[in-house]
Image (cartoon, rainbow, N blue to C red; front, side, top):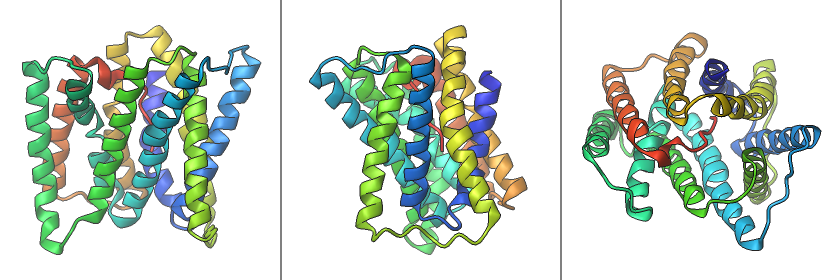
Length: 289
């Protein structure tokens, strides 16, 4: 089941790229998040899982976490896909465990031991290798969007760990998706209700996959995996997501990562492995593309 989650989320990167060729990022994310939230809530009701969140404070915590982990991540990752390659977006976005390590040290007071310190150093070096050639052509806005999506996800994850909302994980995720939907729907309105010009069947296929598989189904499988496996095993399994994403982008989209992309990818993967192997904050709910 964990392998299925990894494959689904890995394939979700090129799937989102297909969807974004015709749909605007605001439209794409509104449909994905909104439909995903509705499906998860329906499943929760069917399984008798309460969606009630006790207390206004806990609800506000979910609002903040949803804006960061769902809204911020989703929109920034979508704009990154439009501005740079899917491979580079996946590589930069999966610096999230490194940022979670740093935020956990600053805001949760978690001790930065040798393993986590090494993760930060290797991750920073990997980012430098990845970004350096891009500055030759000006500001690498696509890579910066992708990096921003990783920071947003990590901030939301650490915030949620600090908040400790007393509710079932499916309920917590469902309400975060609702918050994310509202935030991107607002962006959709402010952007002039620009839906996009649907001209390719692959766009509809990408939207459908990202909604049903990448959002709703993957989260359901993820919760099943977490229930049966140690958190460290489940967390480490997500490291394969960008690997599958990069390989799928090469096959489906014709992406050809440069040598510096490959070196940066390897270094960031090693750093993420170190971070996930040592930091509880980095083992919270992962997120799809």
